[in-house]
Image (tube, rainbow over all chains, first blue to last red; front, side):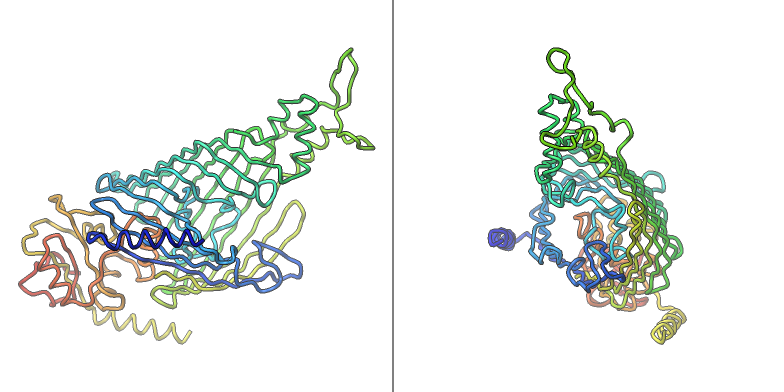
Amino acid sequence: MKKRYLIASLLLTGFATSSYADIRVNGFASIYGGQTLGSDDALYNYSDELDWQNDSLFAVQVSADVMDGLSATAQLLARGSDDFNAEFEWAYLTYEVSENSQLSAGKMRIPFYRYSDFLDVGYAYRWVRPPQSVYNLSFSTYEGLSYLHNSTIGELDSSLQLMVGAVDTDITAITDSDAAELKDTIGINWSLSNGWLTGRVAYFVSEASIDVSGSSELSGLLNGLQAYGLNQQYNNLAIEEDDAYFAAIGIGIDYNDILFDAEYTQFEIDNSILAKQTQYYVSLGYRMDLVTLSATYEGNDDENSNDQFNQVPRSITGPGGVQIPVVAPGTNPPLYLQDATNLALASQAAKSNAYSFTVRYDFHPSAAFKVEFTHFEDDLSNNDADLVTFGVDLVF
Amino acid sequence: MKNFIILTLILFTSCSLSAAVDVIVHPSNANAIDAGDIKKIFTGKAKSFADGSKALPITQADGNPATDEFNQNVLNKSSSQLKAYWSKLVFTGKGTPPEEAANDAEVVSLVSKNPNLIGFVSKGSADGSVKVVQSF
């Protein structure tokens, strides 16, 4: 932490002493309280006790024009969910290649979604939080390069972003914290807008590895498969340098104070225990001067395809044609690895939907008050939860 | 609700007064500049004039009558919408909002000294040291 501050202060002093450096300091903050309405209900890390940390954050961004066309930007972000420990969320250099294209290098946001870039800047959108069914990946930054090209195609504004880089962080996959590596991530993110209608597509490919040793059940199962020499089945379950893709399509309308947003995303890591995920939301909003009302419906559906089940044989042929049952050693009654694998694959399924109502009130030129009610339904367990969140987003 | 009524009244009165703004540039700036160009320059979508020279917009402080007028009539955005728009660009390294002047006089004085600048002032605030290219 100390080291980080030192870097920040060095950056600052380094630029400040250069007489040409134009330094800009901006920031944003969100202060939110929330609680679920039913006893023992939990949603988005909220419980039935009022919590002020989950969605609260504070960020300061320092950017400096180093010289002609070259700038450096660092964004320090302290999240309440992380005990307000400040971390560099973004830290990158940007070079203006031409008037309408820029090349950036460093730590940046992966543009998975329409609102990815300003995920944390609550002031920039109308919800308390972007629809979580879609915005549910537990990581959002990468290290690498980004090329952005803005142009006009006829009457349309086009914004094309190409990114290449890697992610190396702990994510929520099998457990809440699994070491993950996404190598050779390449992506394209393209938006077209005519002023009131915006369309967007994004597509990413990567080579994913996730260390599952945090889950004793899964690592035990993988070891078992290896012990029986079932390497193909092992590879179909383990997440080791597997091809992954992420695809998104989105639309946004802002017309005569009527707002509409919809996004659909799909994500899969091939030949792995992780299920193919599809998620979407549609959101309708209406702006009345300082007050914006929104209603949002969202859904998430994760499922492993049928051909992944029953891939583990119940027995293998040993020396002399003896049939050896493929079971977990020392289990009585014997636990067949086929059943254990099927269970593990089935455990990745998820199906949920939610609807929310949000009121945003711009009570100040740089701040907005929001209150949001969310009803969430888990379609597999038939559990549901109601959540109310309220608070303030500001920019400075 | 009471606030709403007051706000609506304020809005109506400001509309009926129909203050107007003049968009001004340096006298040496011979570019044809229409409403679309102005909108693009003030939203960061265009960074130069037709002749290729750099265009640097200057806005005025929030709450100045000229600012409100310009935001509504030229950019078609409320000050909150505009702030949200710039937040999206600022916090993603994709753009920087225009520099802000305190009042009409400061805009006139800055524009009169720099051929790259373009600003707006309340109707009638411009003097001979600048050129009015559009009025709204």
